[in-house]
Image (cartoon, rainbow, N blue to C red; front, side, top):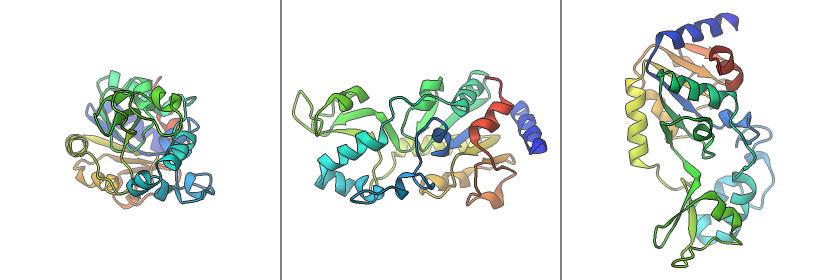
Length: 242
């Protein structure tokens, strides 16, 4: 492990065009549960599986139940950026990290200070009226009773997150692809790379410094240049002074 960390740090020192691609494991160290681990949402008991509740069809047909789940299980107002978020923000400030590409919707990268963040699945901090498209913040959702309605037109206010059955934003995808294509070093952390189409973005990397940091093996271990099986926060903290 020590040799792997030494190599990882040397690569960080060498590179000035680093891109980070992260998943739910980046935020679990902030107390936000993931979906697929033993304690994740998929292993909790609900009337319907989370992937059903978080689908476009369910949102349309059972809007009240969707918001009950959304407020209880998708919003963590007490969560704070952890060592991984802070280290990545520091690398950006140093001019080394050019982009963060995240599957998370919690906004913790921005809270840590990162500026160039591409959110593949949207953000709970952005909400909009389906009728007049007025924008609302997270506090509006939390303070609303039942289904949040726009005070101007009465339309339903929904979170700007990508639900199952919905497509990712084309602009975000294209920006992520461009960043990965041009990266000297691609760091992937906190994801098993099992969720598509997001996981397929890795295939656009053309460099020779693909680093996978995850507690367990991933679907792309066979193409990695360096694999570190550990918590992403601990690894980044050991290599970046924050």
